[in-house]
Image 1: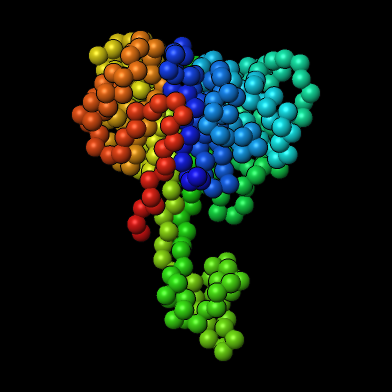
Image 2 (image 1 turned 180 degrees about the vertical axis):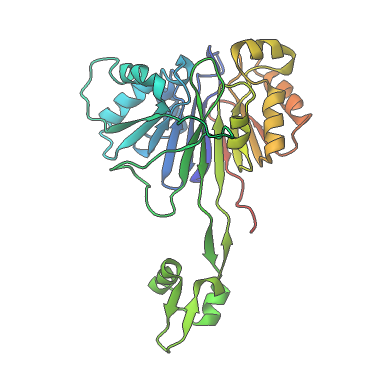
Length: 329
């Protein structure tokens, strides 16, 4: 199984249907496994998808409407029951903390879970209105070593406080085996020292520099944009990412409903992706008004393709969507 992929647990919006569970998404990224927006039924969907509670390294919630958060109670109890030993941070808009605490203590159970609450707050916007928060690592969090991807959040425009998330892998370098051999660098620990220190002294006295035996390795990126109207933050989160997961609750013929309930239409979501230069777009969070499973993907794909020509997935429950191959330097 690829460790850089999106696992889709649920794709319905407010009301689940026979074919679609409430929201839930797990981003697998090497040692990182972020559970986004665990709606009702997430614990069961994790089992269907073959993702264990032990895999999870963070829970990130965009806002505290039930279809994005009711599953937190079950997931927390699963972390406790499985006695997950590492700390799992839970990030969420700060105004939602009372509901987060209620969900974590929604029923009687032995509290063995190790979670750390990370309410997301934003300072007053600077003159140009840009607001972004980097989510800090916490003691005991797994996968927090050097070169680990960085998670940031921005405020979206919904009916209650909501945030979107973006994960960025730092740019790095990859060694060129041919150049290593030509430079006389032996395989094994010496290569690690060269990458870490940038320079290596060989036994014969010669010096090898990292940039002489390596090539740039662009980092990969991911963005998660749920319930929101069109706003600058959605475009900023999506800018240039390899994989964008975005709500497309309504078809554009129902744009009046989207505006009333502070959601995106499929066309609007695809326009955001096209303008942002997204490589692969995942549409999800579909209204229950579109009831025919065989027709829904066709209609949403047709509308998105009118404005977006990159990779496209109209998500279904239990889909697995790989992050596109790394960009060439």
